[in-house]
Image (tube, rainbow, N blue to C red; front, side, top):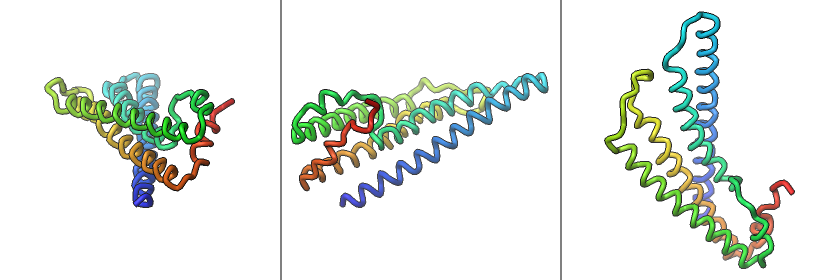
Length: 175
């Protein structure tokens, strides 16, 4: 079962990396085009700024999946590293459960906003703003899958008494 979980999280991570690269390239192309049109052709592209902002929004939420996969978001492991290894493992799992709860709430409200009545039609790009807002529940859904996988791997390590997984927690950070 844990092998299946690892394959799923790897697949989600791979897709998130590809999509993030795509959106970085979109921002690069949109902004370069805008500079070229404005300063070389003396004509402004009306859609490029908004399209770049939307691509950046998607880039943040999908790129966060990669950060969560490596558990590299901002945290301070100093206090956790002082705890005995068995208690440390439980604290780490507890924090991941809190992250999971937060992601579920954010996904729920994000989905409500996408389906809500506050979506406008963007005349510059020609689509509904729901497309930009959809990055929240989609990104959060992907992060939920990743976090569930991390919790499953942590629980497996506890059951196998593989404490090395928890000894290394936070040791790759800058000292």
